[in-house]
Image (tube, rainbow, N blue to C red):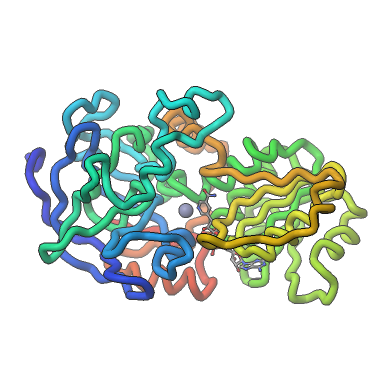
Length: 373
Ligand code: CND
Ligand code: ZN
């Protein structure tokens, strides 16, 4: 067996900002205490990974990004009790240690470990990856654009062994984030009107959540009209392109709905859209949820009347789920056909074609591209 030994394998390394993904042979060290080494089976491409290549989301270079995957536990480090080799798992960008003050709060999923996982190294301050004799850093605790990765045991969810990897990987980010934003964060009510800004993999998952919650009107908003067909296929009742209007989008939505948009979701990561989404929900009883990643160190200026009048402005990380507990249940619901992820996966490519997958994202041609190994 490979347990306890260094594994040589292929990985997509980013050597610096704005550099292409370079497929390299890397060395993956065995897991240390409370870590597991995972063989990746499938991994989706998310906007947040692209944000690492552009600097919108900070990363330490050289780095292996990727955070939406399904894999199989290859080996475990000392003290790991919750997982064993052979388990089918999802590496988690939001951990759940289960013992910090936030994990103990029933309504928080901001585990104390979360602030540590952003540092690009594991608990002992070092990386488990090397390439050409140099350390290569981790990303969001997951680093899934590689045949093998090492992660902390508190950041792994064990899922149904029968779950198909090229769909179930979406529970590592897009689906879980978007669906949870509607169900847990906004708590969308039956019969309500919702508007979703940004119709990528995360935005479409918000739509699925709004629909399951019983929303009667779901308006998709995107500047790329090629996204409308998919949005309607998953539950949008109509779609609007802000570029087709001279009026602010909040005015357009108000007219369309007789001023009754109850919930709005920002799922693009643009600062202007965050204000637009806030202004688009009902001024007194509306709620707007920020789901898109704001650019690092950005500052937003807004008219305080937007909230003074009564609107609620919220955010969420990873859809508000407590992932170690909740992901296995979400995957079971998926296996029981509670929701269908077919529309979200538009492209499946072999891992070597990662650069092509990112080009599809940048050109707005894909919803999710899933890479398989
Ligand atoms: P993706 O790029 O696939 O979709 C974004 C969509 O927004 C595209 O269809 C764009 O055309 C559209 N868009 C861009 N600008 C505008 C605009 N000004 N007005 C209307 N539409 C616009 O991205 P994704 O679905 O992979 O991710 C969406 C966001 O969610 C992104 O910011 C990502 O970083 C973030 C995210 C957050 C979390 C979390 O835990 N909160 C997890 N993963 C991703
Ligand atoms: Zn993501």
